[in-house]
Each structure stands twice: as structure tokens, then as C-alpha cells.
Image (cartoon, rainbow, N blue to C red):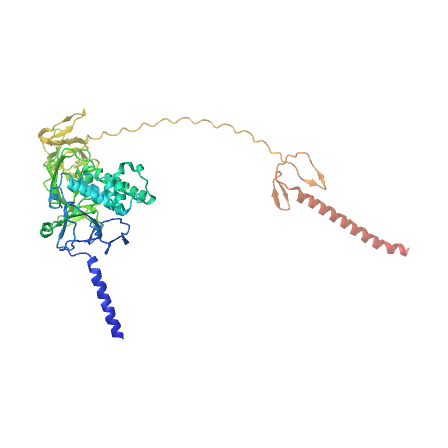
Length: 570
């Protein structure tokens, strides 16, 4: 039993694999295939059956899907006067890009502008609806697609424009019947006949279909729009073409077929655009087209739209004062993992580095001149050694050296500089700095005391040091006469303080002010009259009085006690 289950499971798994094979991506060698739509085998789109198509053609010959690596895509027939495709398989059709130069391989005798017209129709037609021309509440998917197909044939075969009554069979009104002919013949005056509610609904659908058809064949975009989109088709092989079958085009008119690339010209480490350089971008794109664009750099960057391909930026003429950039910058436009177009710069090791911005930047070096620098003593006849000197530009030290018995030479780019003496030789004064400049034509000029510029002799910037003058002995400082001191002002006599006498003696208060010459001492406490507290003195007087009364009382009692017996004895 267990073996039977294993065998059954294996068979089911194989069936699933075999069933899924036609839906998987094709190999790199095989072209994508197409499959026809019919009543017995309706294709799915986004997981939903296309059951809302209303078509009288029993074979559904107008509807096809391309089934390949990206799933099912809508396909349209390109040749109205040829047979609709009946077969499937990658051996019959080959996918390719339809360009203005090869369109006759897909549509023999295609009128001028056919490629652009197809891009506009497929971009706005079913199911892309790029410009939002379709409203699902007004027109079904099936009729929207029908309008798209007839618009394609109008562009590829130059067919006369269809009228609304032409679409009556596709909305369910059979013009082969008497009633159908009546509706068709009275199309311009339908009020002359009475329509049922069902017939009115079908007539409205026919009118909506023709309205969409007209929108598609009359829509137009600008040149950039058509260049930014790719159109793909399925070219017939010789056998299929000989049998009279027509080619197909998919709705896969890819957006962002080009990306805008910005080209910048600056000097080395510069931030502003450098004017006056003649530049070229050349290369081949993925259509094998030769690309060549030339311009002169200005204050703004230059922008071009480029397709996937490999290119190079070259400088033909450098601006005045700059060295010609002899090495071109190789770069490419490629698709990243998300399908977005990016710019990548080729490195010395052959690798490509993506740019954060779609920018290619070329830098030019300034031309240089050799300048001689000389240090002399005033009225001297030879080089003065021992001075520490610098060349400064914009506050940055460019060169530094110690003077010797020979001149010093440096190669400098054109610009403004200053020669500065940091330390003078022993016995010499430090000289003033010298401003000089190298012009774009590489001539040298030195700034004069009157602020004018003059070319130095032999293109040499020369600085002179003066001999230090001997220091004069310092004169002794004469003593300054002392200013007579002002006599001290006599001190004012101190005003005696008059403390309040708060002393209380035996409960009698004194209110008169008493001048106290010295602080009083009470029971060892020294207080000034101003701060004397009357309470201790009063307490002392009371205690003394009570004690005196007590003593007197004792004496009186003792005396009486001694006198009483004496009286009795008498």
C-alpha cells in the first residue's frame, strides 16, 4: 500500500511539472511564444478570466497573448490584409525591437510615421491606458481592446477610419438580420426607430467604442515621448510569411527607453562650470545606432537623453589657460536590477562604477609657467642666502624654501600669488610681501607700489632686504619732580555717643539720658552702655532687697525668742 502511495505521488508531481513547463520562462536561445484566445481555451490576465469580451467571431481571431518570461502580454495583429496567426511555437516567430529603419520587416510597405503611431496607440490602448483615456464604466475591456486593434490596423495599413455602425456586430447587433440592418441604416437618425432598452445599451456601447477608436488614432506626443519608448514585435519566419500569416506587436512599448545624462566641465577641484571647451559624446546604443553630439561648454551643464549603450566623452578644444584633456571618459548606460537606467563610469581596471547622479564630469588642469624667485640685499649684487620664504595663494602655503646663493624656480598654475619672507638673514630686516600673478597667457606681472601691474625683468620675482640699522643708545630717563603732598585735612572731633540709660534700680525707671564715660561691668560681663540690658541689674537689686528683708526678719524672730523667758522670770 505504501509503495502504491509513493508511486501515485511521483506521477502527480511529474504531471504538475509537465503542466507548468509551458508557463515557465524560455531559455536564452528560444524566442517567446504566443498563444491564441478562443472559446475553448481563454487565457488569463492577472489571474482573471477574460469572460467579459463580447465578440461575434467564433474563433476569436482578434485576440492573442504572448506567453513568455514576463507572463502573458497582450499582442495585436499588424497586417489587416493577412491571415490571423493560427499556430504557436518559438520556431515561427522571433521577438525583436521595431525601429524606423526595420519596420518593413514587420509591416511591408508601412507608411511613414507608423512606428510612432503604434507607440502612441499601444501606450494609450488596452491594457496600458497610459494617458487615462479609458473609463471602465463607459467601455468594457473587450471593446476597449477591439478599438485598440482597429486603431493599430489604421496605423499599419492606412485603412479608412471606421464608423460607429461598423462596430455593431461586436456589441451583439447582427447586421445580417432585418432588425440589425434597420438599426445600421438609420444610424444617423436613430430617433426614427424605437429601440428596446437592450438595443439602446448595445448602441451606446458601439458609440463608446468608436469614441475610443477616434481618441487612439488621433492622439500624438512630442518627439521625446516617442524616443523614450521602445516598440517590440514578433517577426514571422520565412515559412509563416509565405503562408500569408501576419506579424504581431505587443503592448510592451517600454517606457524609459532613454535616460537623461548630465555632462559637466570644470577645472580640477572646481565647482563652477568651465566655459569654452568643445566637447563630444559618441558611441553606439542598443539599437546599434551611431551616436555623436558636439557642444561648447557654458555656464550650465549639458544634458542629453541616451539609450542603453556604451559611450565616451571627449574634449576637442580646451578653454583658454587650460590643458587639453587627452583621455576620454568611457561610460555606459545600463539597466540595474530594478530595470531602471543608470550611468556607470569605466575605471582604469575595466570595471564600471554606478554614479549616484546620472552625471559625467570632466576636469581640466590649469596651464603652468616656470617662475624664478630671487632674494637680494638692497644694493647687493648676488643672491642673499638664509632667508625663509614662502609662496602663498588664497591663504595656503604653496611652496617654502630657504634662500641660497642660487635663484629658486617653481612651476605654478596661472593665478594670483604672494611672496612672503618669514625670517630674514641675520643682520637684515624682514621685507614687505610681494603680490604677483600669472596670467592665462602665462605672462608674469608684479604689483607695484602704485597698485599697477608690471612684468618683472627676466620673469623673476625679486625681493630685497635692508641691512638692519645699529640701535641708538637709549637716553637716560630724566627723573620727574615729585608733586608736593597735600597736607592731611584735620580730623573732625568725634561726636560723643549718648546711649539710652536702660538701667532700672528698685523698679524705678530713669528716662534721663546719661553720658557714660566707660562701659559698665556687671557680674563679670562687659557691656557698653548702648547695649546694656537692664534686666540683670534689676534682678540683682530685687534679690539683694529680699535677702536683706529675710535677714532682718530672722534677727527679729531670734531677738523675740531670747527676750520672752526674761520677761517670765520677772
